[in-house]
Structures are given as C-alpha cells and as structure tokens.
Image (cartoon, rainbow, N blue to C red):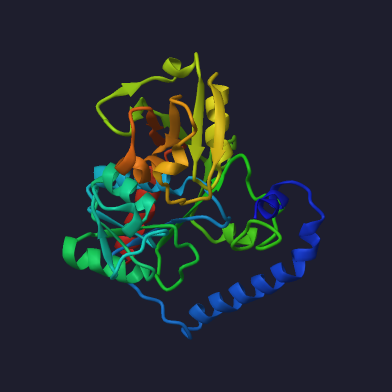
Length: 328
C-alpha cells in the first residue's frame, strides 16, 4: 500500500479517483460524531479530568513522546496520572489489561510498554478506552487520565484535547481517507485545546523537540555508545514506525552511512527479520527495540528520545485544568 501513502504526500492522479470514497468516509464520521452529541451513542464521563493526546492524520506524528512528556509534567505538578491506550498490535486474552514495564508487547502493544517504562505511571489498555480509564481510577486512585491516541474515540468524554502534528509532513494533500491521510477534516483543529508541532517551525503553535540520548545496546542496556562510534562503517537501520524517513534522515544528517530497512508500523519483529548476512551494527528506534529484546544480539542498538515543548505549554495545560476543577 506504499503507493497509496505516497499519494498522500506527493502528487499522484490516483487521489482524484479516491475522492468519492473520501467524501463518503467524511459523511460517516460526521454522522457518528453527531450521534454522540445527540446521546444516541453513549459517552462515558469520568469523575476525574481526561486529557486526550491524539492526531487527525494517519501515521506516526509523535504522540508517544508527547504522552510521556505530559505525564512527567503532571506528576511534577502533584497529580497521580493514569494512562490508557487501545494497545494497538497487542492480543490480550481479556481487557482491560494492565501494563507493566516488563509487559510483553505482543499482549499489550509496543508503545504502551515504552510509556510504562519511561513514566512509571499506572497504565491499562483496552479497545474500549473508558473501561481502561475506569479501571485505573478504581484500582490506582488516579486523579487524572491521559489517553494515548483516542481523539476519535468519542465514547470517552474528555476535558482537554491535544493534537500532535508532524511538523514536516503536516497534512499532506489535506484530504480525508482514503484519498489523503486525514482521519478528520482540518477544521477539527479549531475545536481542540492545544496543537503541538513535532519539529518544524511555527511562532503561533507549540513545537515539540525530540532530543536523542545515548545509543543503548538492546541485549545489554548497560552498554552504551554515541553516534560518533558508528561513523566509520555502514550501519543497518530498521524502522517499523509510522514515519520511518524521519528516523533515517536524522541518522544521515548526523553523518552516518546507513542501509535502511523498512517495515510496516507496529511490525512484530522476528530474529530472521534482522539477518542481513553480516555483522554490521543494527540501529533502531526504542519502539522497535521493545519487540527485539527477546532475541537481541550484541550488534543491535536503539536510540531513545526525550521530548520538550516550548512556549510554556505545561503551564497553560495546568491553568486549563485548574479552571476545569474549580468549575467542577
């Protein structure tokens, strides 16, 4: 389906053939949202504030580091946040499924494991996010809920909506699925509380910067290197993420000679996927490393990132929360 995703960000005449389907899609999602507003579909309201961190486009925009950043800010402000997610890619036998730092990605999904490891917050996954949220409030006394993704999951009522946008790809051709990458029309951004650009430049919006850390060995986390250690050899790079070019371009911009290997988002890696016929180093994202740790060898490495957001966004979120709580 690469031809389809390429048509979203490059001019391809095929997009016009798909426009009738996009119009039908937009009609359906509009009617669905109206059904929630008219209480035809039930919306679940919690007795604690709910913050949605989502997007309006398909593919990786940086929601996971944004969620980790937000959870950290809320903890520092004295909240006890719980985090919920659909757990995409996981196949649990029952839901809600609690997520621990050592949970198996094949059960709960890859991104939830990373979030649990980096935040230390109570976390649960479920296709019905409101059930996961209710579980955390009841069993962990969470006084605020963050939903990783779920902007379009209207069954969970929300108090604050934060949208993360890829600051480089933005909205592609600006069409809704399948002619374009949008889950909802761009006008939806007028209704959300905050918009974060992941990279790029903007004076009117909040910009998130991802700062890479030391490169960590997948097999032994105590072994670390820097990018300079890899500059004298060709490096295999793998990415099973929504926007792999961002990762690959970063490495080439840093002066590495790479041989990129593309995988679909949330790919379930097997040892054979990383057999390239040599002993050259293999660099990957933390999201991919989570799924490779069971069969990791000493030539596999991952690069963690830490998010920061400008323009005092954390203070603006806390001010908004204070107004919600005082009103409640």
